[in-house]
Structure formats: C-alpha cells, structure tokens
Image 1 (cartoon, rainbow, N blue to C red):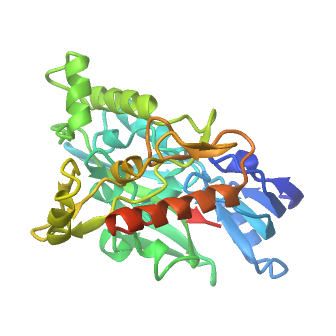
Image 2 (image 1 turned 30 degrees about the horizontal axis):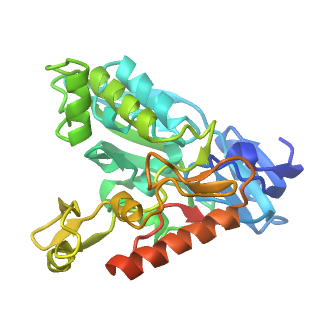
Amino acid sequence: MQIQQNISLKPFNTFGIDVMAHHFISVSTMEELKQILSLKEYPNKLILGGGSNMLLTKDFEGLVIHVNLKGIEIISEQTDFVLVKANAGENWHEFVLWCINNDFGGIENLSLIPGNVGTTPIQNIGAYGVEVKDTFVCCDAISIENLHTETFNKQDCHFDYRNSIFKNEAKGKYIVTSVTFKLTKQNHKLHINYGTITSQLEVMKITEPTIQDISKAVIFIRESKLPNPKIIGNSGSFFKNPVISKTDYNKLLKNFEDMPSYSVSDNEVKVPAGWLIEKAGFKGKRFGDYGVHKNQALVLVNYGNAKGVDIYNLSLLIQETIKRLFGIYIEAEVNIL
C-alpha cells in the first residue's frame, strides 16, 4: 500500500474534471482503509468512490482515499426473498445486472445509474418510480473518528428525496463500506407505470414484462436521453426536482399552462427541474467546452477540457434564472468540492 503524489483525478470522476490530488491512495480491504484513516499526518482527507455525484472545482491539497472494496454475497435466502450484501466499491450498474441475472428483483428500475454501491444510500438514488430505500435493509459504515464499524438500518438513515443522514448530521463522519438489500425471488413487484417505461415496453411489444425487460427498457431510455460519461463528462442529473405548494403551483399555471407536476402530498407537488431549465432556454446551450446537454436539460456536461468552476458557475446562473422566472429554487444534487 503506497501513497502516490500529484495524481490527476480525471479518471476518478465522471465529469472528467482534471484536478490534482496532492496525495492519493486506493484501498481494497478494510484493513487498508483503517490503516490509512489512522494516519495523523494527513488530517485533510477526501473519500472517493465512483466519483459520480461530485463536481471538482480545484486541486485537493490533502489525501484522497479511493474506496475500492469489492465483493457480493448472499446473506440469507428464503422462498420469496433474498438478502444480498454488496461492498462499496462495486459498480452500481454491474451490481444491478448481477441481481437481474440471478432473477433477484427490486432494483431493475435503477439500471445504468452511474457510480458505486457505496454512494447509493448516501444519495438515496432513484429513477422511474423507485428509490434505493425501497429495497435497503442496512449499510455498514466505518467511523472516521474512531475506526469502529457501525450498522445503519433504514430508520437510522433518515431517507428522504435524494437525501439521507450521510448528507446531513453524519456528513463527513462515516465511510459506507457495504450495503445490504432485500430483493424478491418470485412474485416481483414491477414498477412500470412511469410513463416512459410504459411507452418503451409498448415499443418492445412486451405485454407481460419481466424484471429483465424493465431493465432493458430503462437502459434504452437512459441511453437515448443521457450522455455516456465515458464519452461526455457528466454526473447525471445535476439538480433535484423541486417540491412546491399546490397553491404556488396553481399560481404558476396561470402563466405556464403546460407546467407538469407530480403529486407529493395533499398540499405539495413536485415540478420537473428539467422542464424549468428547458423553459428558461438552457437546454442544449453550449459555452465553449461545457454546457447543458441537448437531450436532457438536467444534465450539465464537460465536452472535453472544461474547468469545474466553469460548470459550477453555469449551475449558479441556471439557479438564478429559474428563481427569477418562476420563483422556484432548484437545489443541486451534485456535491461541489
């Protein structure tokens, strides 16, 4: 185990931002992780997983720890359900495919989301009517302060829309090392009522879909709308969909009759941030080497050699414009570092 000096983080973040880590190490075992966390000479540490939910705006002067813990195992199995534990460094989409290949259902709607397993409970990732919390049982996380491993169950995690305890009171205090999911073995509960999935299944001429069919439909939809980070740097959706009161929504409808919404409660609705950004004229807009993707306004992109600060400033401009036009603040889903 050797700490490297002055390493580019471009291969380690899906935005493809070329900033330097003054010190860098990749760990593949819990023993290595504990050993490196105990080093006192590096008080400033950055924990890096799949690099899919961050925008790097400057060089990091401390120690970057790349968590590369691998492994998938079946913890227990019953007639209808199975508990599967995946270590934090496993690629999320590859884990989803592993589950589908074993006919384990529950996360097929989350196919092709970039990043690693360890990030999923932090962000409570979600897509097409499904969130990680729906199948989440618990996660193990190591305390950065005392190096003890703690187990967080669903209640402990305080899951909310793209949110968890790890983004709030526990932020920067723990490193998620593994996640356990409860998945179905039969009688899968399919989530196909999300409009685009229903339409894609019709195109595929599938009337009785399997979890494999749903995954294929989701992959097709995502590939048609979202850029591949290996080709065009991005982190997927940059902004959260804002939740506003039905009163405010009804007022906005007077000026924007085609504004879509999804009911959240008796008093609140969720408005698609992508619609707001597109309506504000940003969809497909390019500023040199960075911009807003032509097919999905939620996605900010690096066309090659953009600086993180440029993309960050673009996000601020979008937020300010949306606030001015609609009176709505859209929150960044991506961590700015």
